[in-house]
Length: 436
Image 1 (cartoon, one colour):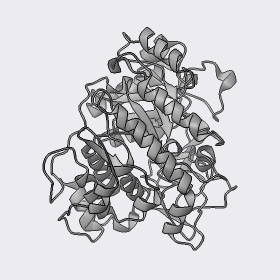
Image 2 (cartoon, one colour):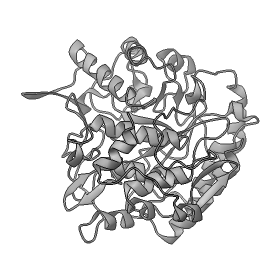
Image 3 (tube, helix red, strand yellow):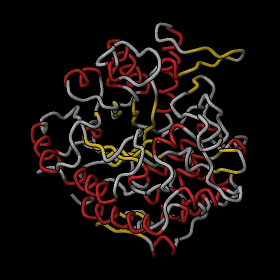
Image 4 (cartoon, helix red, strand yellow):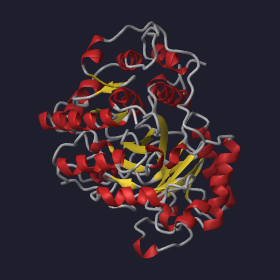
């Protein structure tokens, strides 16, 4: 099924696509790879989904222009262990959702709109988009609140579909929630990107929903474990290939003196089984499991089934990163990685520091085949307004609209002229890296 065409028709558009001159004027080119740079996010978020699709087709590295979106889209092929080298870029799809009055909705459509501004994968390694929210959140899903009212993205509900912040439920009679995820993944793959999503494993941050009740998650309950596995397998079957696991470092009670989650974590052998079952039931040999701060005891995390960890190597020390790249070059299944920033980032970093860290992530190796994995946030590509931060937007869900419209929120969520200049510099860094 052509999920992209189905989405276009559900939104009232026709399937016929036109070359987009605006996109051509704003494109960055690295060999045959193209994306939008030197832009502000609202310039693409206020466009229609059809314009986003036309932008992606205009940016296609293929030789022909598709007047209709192709039927058969495959994920970019970097082999089964692609996640060992990848750059992971987390996009807070709730923060860029449509804020209309007190409602938050259609985050998957905004995620589609921002895809053209994400640099595609390089010759030697993949770029992978991580979506912050998939499942309903516990603290007021579908609504925005004041800038200091709790609405944490870290509390999720399982066995009750997908977030009202993310799915366009006004068109689910024409295209289901699952098909909307399929459409997003097909468009991301067409643009040369891998895709994944964030999940949580702290028991008191998860609720299990039944038709007549909700109950707290319990890792000792076999039914809860089965629901957890099946919910994640469903998403893999919609085209996602990566799961970012919050608090993965502490699985099995490891170094829990630094654990900041709430509730019990799965046992080590239990998590081995869960990851193995997600692989087996999905039939996917290419899956990448990224563990938050799962670094230090490399064999522990490799044997757990993880592909990459975060925040092991100091991103400000280019030569040290190169040295670790050399030390770990024979570890082809798992490697610890570098962070530009993470979901706990409270802002305040200088643009120069972020750019230097991106430079280290993209070039910190002797040979591109030995690159360490890296992790960065939406803010590292598109700077947020000064009175908010990545972590603030994970913990709360404010609207920055001044007139109640989604367009005003898009415009005011990010910085203005300096953000454009910064994005141009990020684009130049990727431009020099994508042909390596």
